[in-house]
Image (cartoon, rainbow, N blue to C red; front, side, top):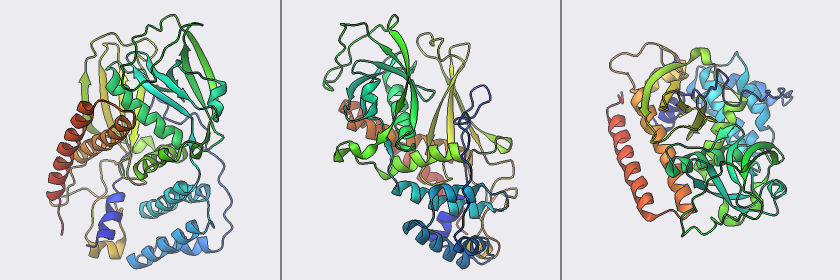
Length: 400
């Protein structure tokens, strides 16, 4: 089996995240855009090629579609519209969305123009507000952000978890287009009270924002390129942002979801604020279009315990890895019960791989924000441990 064949097959093992709050999926409040009319005559031939029984013909069609993306002959919205069609195969959808991700990476991404640090139990305090971004008309240094676009920054577990949430929300902002707006809920200190948290070498001052004014603002986003060149987006950031965007544009069918058995509870050492009790905060990571679409929902229940739950868009009859000979004849993505030889440990791999992606984001964020070296070393050690476990699981998989 070639590396390309294995990669294509692996992408078809698609996991999605349960991110519902009272039954409403993450991003579900946004109406889906109307599908554009695709007039390019070559699209029909490419779609037929992507459905061919000949593996090499499907590869050729993918290359042709990529050329259309690279020459701006097809837009991201057109590709997503093709992926929404109900008459296509899982492999067609995967190949189309891989090209949609490529198109997404080529376009200007959104930026908010702020710097922030965690504040235990309150959210994230603003340490910088760029004057060349629209956010300067709405927020100021010293404001404490509690949520952006409905995603809470209040973390009962304290600063480390808030860094996780900051990284996730940063990715969500990147997933937007310049000109989009996000709703920000924040607390503003009383007039004359100055909170200086800009010095990264010093800890964030202790604050009690109980009596601070709570405000809401719809903040327009600008182009990420307005930031300094040193803030260039990495490929992992862009890929994670694409997964968030895809969750809005192409929601998974919840009827097909099934639990993958990744659940644990942690008791925080203080009461969970009423504002987030019974709500959920979602994290989303991914390296390719469909692979690793795993929501780890963090739900706070009445007993002040938080539960991490993963659910997958893989039904009881999971996608089966096929040998290269089978794939050449029938294509990837046929759903069938797994036998003992072909069984993939989806539960373990999904859980560990998701944690690896989150830690990678957290390492990048902590380094960028000058976090203590001890914390960075601890995260890197955990990352190495998880990667070794993934490698061990991979060795157990069949290579026939």
